Amino acid sequence: MIPEPGLYTGTLRHRRYRPRAHAFSYELFMAWLDVDRIPDVMARSRLTGFNRFNWASYDDRDHLGAPSESLRERVTTDARAHGVSLERGPIYLLTHLRYLGYCFNPISLFFCYDATHTLQAVLAEVNNTFGERRTYWLWADNRQAGRADYRYRCAKDLHVSPFMPMDLDYEFVLSEPGEALVVHMATHDRHLESPPLFDATMTLAHRPWTPHAIRMALLRHPWMTIKVIAAIHWQAFRLLIKRVPVFTHPAHVQPAPKHNEGSR
Image 1: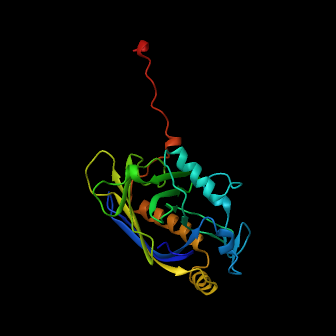
Image 2 (image 1 turned 180 degrees about the vertical axis):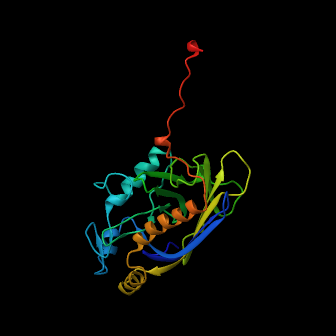
Image 3 (image 1 turned 60 degrees about the vertical axis):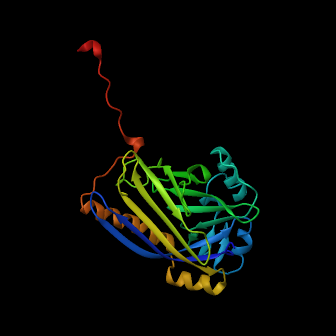
């Protein structure tokens, strides 16, 4: 059974294996929302809002596509653009909200179900600190064959961290959303059979969307997204101290000069 709209609370762990070992973890919480009922859910607490300022608020501008369209329409349009056929069924979003007007989502996940409430596909919406966004569809075409779990592999095509090269694959491993949810992502060298370069794991537990649960989460993490962006920059500083190599954003890489054969 699909969990009702609520909160997922738990921990995020990052581990880097090469070229320098580096690891950290911190507590977090994320919203779990039925994309067709977001205004109703946000109206249940005086501390939450829909497309307006509040301690915690959902804003249509924070996700893919044109804010003038419904979130379901935007997900369906992106699926069609990537050749993914979605049956009409519930779509649930795991994401960070805006907290006191600020939002940064390293990754949001849209869990797309069919009419029988069977998980059909997952859309991973990835943002970087340069204001860029990419979507990765996890579905039948890139699900790893012979695996009972939800395990997918796709090519990385967004410069997320300056401490990682572009020529990598993402491997996503997801549990079925329920009272617990585990989201694991690892990066692998695209052309080599080798252990992962890096992995990140969210281990989460479902909480109901009630005024009390929301209040307790906000008191524990009053500005969740500032914590996220602060952690990103603090860990980047630690990686610089460890002299982990830095990779230039592809848009800023100068092409190699062309030699004039006739002048040789």
